[in-house]
Amino acid sequence: GNVDSDDDDTKRLRQVLEEGGAYITFYVYATVVHPLDTLEFRVNDKILGYWHDPGNGWERISAYIPPGDGLDYDGDGRHELSWKYNYFGKRDSDEDSVRLDDLTIEATTGELIVTDQKLEHVEHGTLPALNMRHPSGNGGWEVLNEGDGAYDGYLVLGASTRKVIIDANSGSGTIDTFRGSAVMSLTIVTGEFGGTLRFSTKVDLLTPIDVLEVGVDGLAVLAVTGSYDGDSDYWET
Image 1 (cartoon, helix red, strand yellow):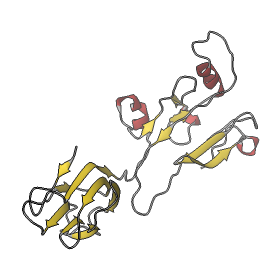
Image 2 (cartoon, helix red, strand yellow):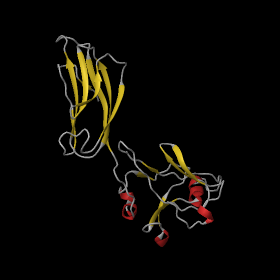
Image 3 (cartoon, one colour):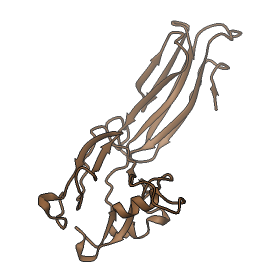
Image 4 (cartoon, one colour):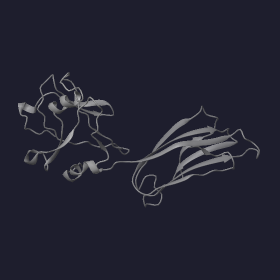
């Protein structure tokens, strides 16, 4: 919805973050004319956005808010976000106004470790960042009990050619195609300086028929097209 700011000389909206870093995103529509009007966006009294001209319609604004320090002014992890509209014109002016919409605050993921305990109950939401759902015609990843064959613990995430083909032909009653994919995604929000993704894989692939791709934001950063050193029981980190 819209937040109208064309009634009074000054409008302030406040949002307090308890703890942890986050990204804030919002859209602003500012029809202000300097020096009569200004709009300020602040985090803990530090100006991160300033508008003093009519603008060109809706504008998307985003900012990173670090946890507990940096922009934090009282040391307890709390942040105050404020939008201040200053108006110096006539009381009956209805030409100048400010509108905010679609405000989103998305907390950073922090350290995420996929443990056996979380995998064991993944269907109950223990790993909300992990998405193993797949559209019709594609295969899916599964939580498998590998016992001593796992790299760490006993549970692993696995996909197989057999299941991909079966899922790709589901509903047809016969094997019509030998092509398909199994896609799994992990959605995270990194902090200001990014992070490190660490995982181990064990593959038994036949090039060029099979390939394992790892992507970040839609771009492939790793492609595996065969077993490591010809050993399908070898884990690579």
